[in-house]
Image 1 (cartoon, rainbow, N blue to C red):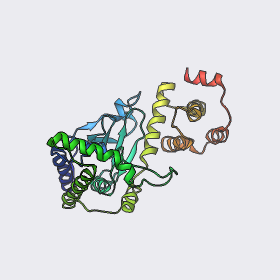
Image 2 (cartoon, rainbow, N blue to C red):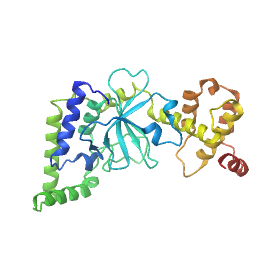
Image 3 (cartoon, helix red, strand yellow):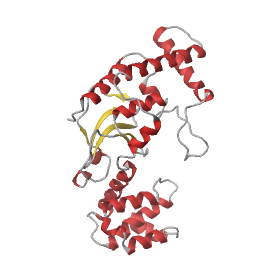
Image 4 (spheres, one colour):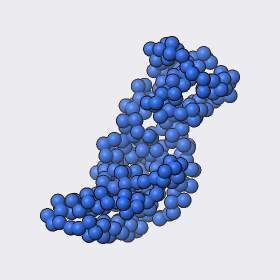
Length: 290
């Protein structure tokens, strides 16, 4: 069982308490967070989410504390040589993207205060996907306020206007912030992002899991030579070129660098990268994928 620092334990207790009460600013609705009644033991992510038991190859440990609306889990990520508090990651199911959300629980709550829906359905982006998430506009919130009004009516058997729903939600958000600020060190969004950068890339780490899983799944053993490395690399080449896969060249580079530094600068890997833009034959896809 994970042991939290006294500060983190108090923050976790606060989130539990908030969830146990009726609030229009509902954590499950706005952040897809359904906080557990108590901390879970170590999650079996490296066993149950892959074709192969990866606990034999990675020392990472995950301790879940919340579900993500049934599609994933929020967890404390303990990696090798972790210093200080464990960062918060999203272990996504159903092909969702894994994410490193915050450097610790303090920063996660700060993030909740800054943004409605940083992980839920109420976020929005500019047309350019590379730009950071923006607070939703008034138009973005319209449907949300209707749902808030419906929840109020269901709880109190009384209808309220959309304007009133907005006022009550904003009031409830202020109450959340006031109560949270008694426990957390509130920091800026820039500081939250800078603190995240102090930890390894979780996307790169998952790429390493994925590469090792495919290696053991297709080869039935660990890579022993460059020929076997190339076979797995071409599995990834077909994935990169598939419209149904989110795999990128960057994922493969991170996986090889992390798992096989001895092959990272090898000629076979360099040649594979050069040839990546060339088409792969249907015959080879069938041979590799069976």
